Amino acid sequence: MQKELELAILPEKMEDLVHIKMEAAKKAGLSPKRILGVRIRKRSIDARGKQVLYRVRVLLFIDEPEPNSTFEVSYPMVSDVSPVIIIGAGPAGLFAALQCIENHLKPIVIERGKDVKERRRDLALLNKEGIVNEDSNYCFGEGGAGTYSDGKLYTRSNKRGDIEKVLQIFVAHGATEDILVDARPHIGTNKLPHIIERMRQTILEHGGEICFNSRVVDIVVEQQQVRGVALATGEEVRADKVILATGHSARDIFELFQKKQWEVEAKAFALGVRIEHPQSVVDRVQYHCDVRSEFLPPAYYSLVEQVEGRGVFSFCMCPGGIIAPCATGQGEVVVNGWSPSKRNNPYANSGTVVQINLEDVPGSRQDAFAMLRFQQAVERKAFELGGGALVAPAQRMVDFVEGRISTDLPVNSYKPGLSSADLKEVLPGFVHSALKGALPLFGQKMKGYYTNEAVLVGVESRTSSPIRIPRDKDTLQHPQIVGLYPCGEGAGYAGGIVSAAIDGINCANACIGC
Image (cartoon, rainbow, N blue to C red; front, side, top):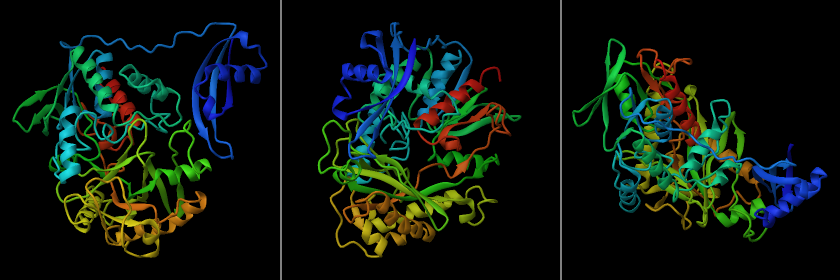
């Protein structure tokens, strides 16, 4: 017999499986001897009371042994079967490739950037010297934007596909099993590249192909049927099915669609700043203590408020994290955040953004590129205000709300450096106004959040794609082109690693028999 129940466990007892078993037996009214196995299904931190606890959902195996829960996928050899071209080696592209192999199709993954190991050198130049390699940066390269932006796996995409399968595939390639049970699973930038390398090895070992440093400049279509792609080198790769998984920053792909008069449409996105606090401030507020217990992870937060009819919300919160420069072209400043697996840096950061609707940008219902140009204009203003070399404009939190340029800025994690500025000069007026109204309200919800110890760094603008590439809801193909499958964040159908991975799997499944 099996029984599922929820327990409240002290943080210092969370690794004590004997204690958890005894607590489960007590709550179930059973002798511990009858419980032959305890499997943790989910766990989360509950910091609402004075005593911080773990809420743990466990599955008890009563009078029966716990079965083996090993996850296995049987991948066949596909070197000599029908090919599917996958443009982009981010989570959508890699999971599409693995699913293609499972479906007995040969994936040919074409990635404009470098493999994860080679990407590190370009990221070092980006951080230290402000030099942007437009094909190899935080957004482009093997693993996509998530690889060096942390590997957060939290998603609400429960109805889109099999979240458990995505997490299990990560575990099969080296991720800790903690991601299967944590309410907010996280791999960490220091570990995710090695997992991506193992996924690449699985693809290659079973007959798939991966081409790095290969920028797609054209999608070859004959009589409304896709026939392959053309590369910047002049080479053509032929296939009757192409999964387009290029990510939210591949603006040249959108321009290609515009040139060919293929349908695209403007899409709402969110824009704002990245806010950094000392992690100790967040710990103190969330855990109601002066010093965080060694048995608790660095604290996170999630905040949302309505101001002037607009949603303002925290996004991609990184406990123990670092703010990173995520520009993909010259003359722009874009910031994001990431954390290592231990989340042991002294700062906590989060995107804090305002929804940008089509109504906010004149002409966006008629002009598919209006939202993209709006996004670009803000990023270029941030570059100008920062003074170049990816230095970012910044302002202390209370100074921002009260309209003062900060006389100095706190020590922070952003390696290219910060320049004290009035962020009102870079943010659209309605975004600035909404943020200004929301921050004190956030401080009322989370005592200690509203402080001049916090710094606002501009701009957080790549929360999602400002353009959607339409597709048929049943076939997942572009309405004008047979065999072309817009996929993932870049096409406007995902918002994070797990949802992009699920969409990649769905597109690979759509390729069967089409």
